[in-house]
Structure formats: C-alpha cells, structure tokens
Length: 110
Image (cartoon, rainbow, N blue to C red; front, side, top):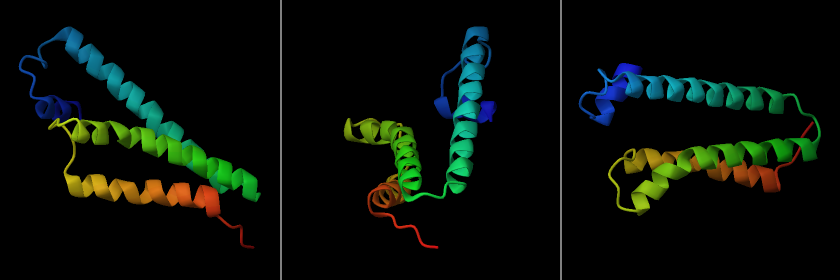
C-alpha cells in the first residue's frame, strides 16, 4: 500500500528519502488506528439497546464519517485537483445523510 501511495503522490525521490518514508510510516500507523477505532465504535454501537444510546452512537459515527470525507469536499470547492472522482464523492454522502437522519429520527423496533 505504501508503494501505491508513493506513486499516487507523484513526489520524485520520496522512496529514497529516509525522512519521507518515516512520515509515510507514521501516516499508515495513524490510519490503522483510525480504522480500528471506527470498527470498534460500530461493533460497540451494535450492542446498544436503548434508543438514546443508539441515537448518540449514530451521531458519533456521523461526525466521524463527515470529518473523514470533509477534506475531499473542501479540496473540490477550493478548486484543487487532488480529490476522488465526483461520483464517489456523491456516493460518500449517502451514509453521511443516512447516519444523520437516523440519529435524529431513528426508532427502536423490537
């Protein structure tokens, strides 16, 4: 995955730079923890049984997902070119809107 990131960044000499590779290693380390934290939050939210707890967990997942995708939208609106294709950006809005809707209007059915 690190080689793919290096080729996508298009920075010449990055693979030979010790400091640059150290920064990429830290980024990969942080992304791993973010992913593990998100998975843990989803698994924990599946164990909740009260409506208020479920709404709170859903809102927290909404915030995490929103801030994970927000840089792409800021880059798009500021005129940058380093963002995913527009179709994928629109598709990422579906779970964001769904999580927000459920956090406000969700119902607990038994």
